[in-house]
Length: 124
View 1 (cartoon, helix red, strand yellow):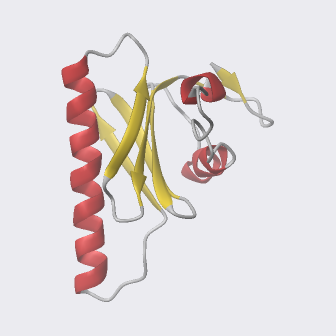
View 2: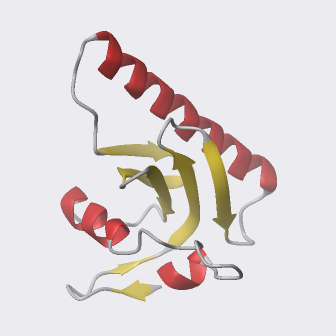
């Protein structure tokens, strides 16, 4: 669990990074999630990003900044960062406004960018 300045606690189950085109780059997850669930989670995010990008392009809409996905694994918040997308899978019990979660994720935008660093350690 991680406590932020506003003092809510979030239980992070998994993290994933996608490049600016929505292609998967890397992920980290807690040991409690089986690989097949992580793969399905990543595939769902990839499909969501692809659909959102297709719709944005087709209708000449501006790019989107966030996506919230509720699933049987928990709540996923996908955030557009400078040159990538960050996806964080929270426990089902996350009870915070979307803006607060987005801010919290952006404050930790560089997780795992350093050799040997752990993104989950940064979030939990």
